[in-house]
Structures are given as C-alpha cells and as structure tokens.
Amino acid sequence: MLRAPSSRASIAIIFALISILPWPTHSAKKSYVQEACSVTQHQDLCIQLLTPFSSSAKRSPTKWARAAVSVTISEAKTVARFLGRVKNNKRLMGRNRAAVSDCVEVFEAAIDELHRSLGVLRRLSKRNFDAQMGDLNTWVSAALTNEDTCVDGFGGESGKVVNLIRNRAVKAGYITSNALALISKLAASGFQTVLPRNSKRRQ
Image 1 (tube, rainbow, N blue to C red):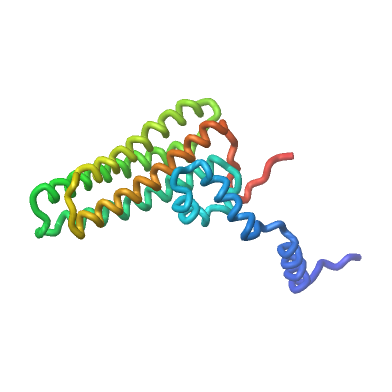
Image 2: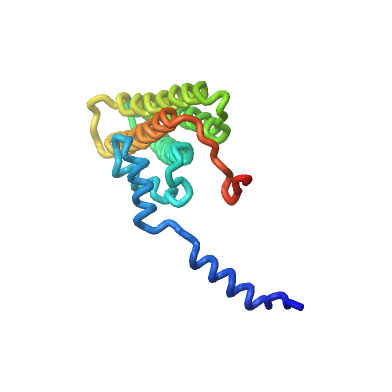
C-alpha cells in the first residue's frame, strides 16, 4: 500500500516544481516592453512606465493597451489634483488663473474619456471589435486634445507655477500619445482572446 507523501515532502516537491518553471528573465521582460513601446513616439517614457507590466502583458497587444490607458489615467489624476491645489492659490491672477480653471475642466474631461476607454478595453468582443477600436481612438484622441488645450491656454506666459503646470500637462500628453499608439497597434493586430490570469485553455 502506497503512503501519501508527508507535508514536508509535499512542500519540497512544490518548491522543486517552482524552481523549474520558465519564469520570464529580466532580459525577457525588457524585450517585451521594448517591443511594445517601439510603436510609440516617446519610447523612453513608455518603457519607464510600462516595464512593471512586462510579466503579465508579454506580447499581448490588448494587455499593453490596457496597461497604457491605466497608467495614463493615473498620470491625469495626479495632474488634476495638482491643478486643483494651484487653482486655490489666491496669488495666481488674471489670465493665468483663468487658464488654470480651464485646465481643471479639460483634465476632468480627459479622465472621463480615459475611464470610458479602459472600460471598453476590459470587455472587448470579436463581434464589436472594429466599433470598439473606433470608440477608443475617438476618446483617447479627445483626451490628448484636452491636455494640449491646457498647455495652449497659457500661451507665452512664464513663471515658476506656469512652467510647472505646462511641464506636467505636456508629460501627461506624451503618456496619452503613447497609449493612443498602443491602441492603434491593437487595432492593427485584430481581436485576440485574453484569458483571465491563472486560467487554462480547455484541451
């Protein structure tokens, strides 16, 4: 009669199996993100922000697009919070104060558009794929336009606060531009089924 392995033996077997699993190496992770970001205009920024997603995204255009939009939302929210604080600064006067108020509005609109985009990316379907790609392109492009509008609102104005706002808004625009490029790559790649994490294909 065979004996069931002891708990200690079972643990040893599990660790032995883990040790031989093909985990992505650092070089593989770097290769994945570099390949994904190769279609973007601001590649260094893309690689910097999306490297943490390499292990899960690998070569999935859907996952890279989703990651890019998620990162863009985080950046836009950070800028919006900063703008909210600046708006309450009573030392900001005249045209610059009006421009900050406009920036708050357009960034709030951009965040809404990006959230709508992320929602679509989470429920892509083969049947509606082309229409969904059209919506994504429209909404993310609109978010980018809103961010550019914020920058344009200051015209040739300068100063520490204005320059800080401009730099943050420009960076958000770069990140949004990268997300748009990865959405375009997804559209060109066509619909692909993305399995939930830890799920297995049926044989």
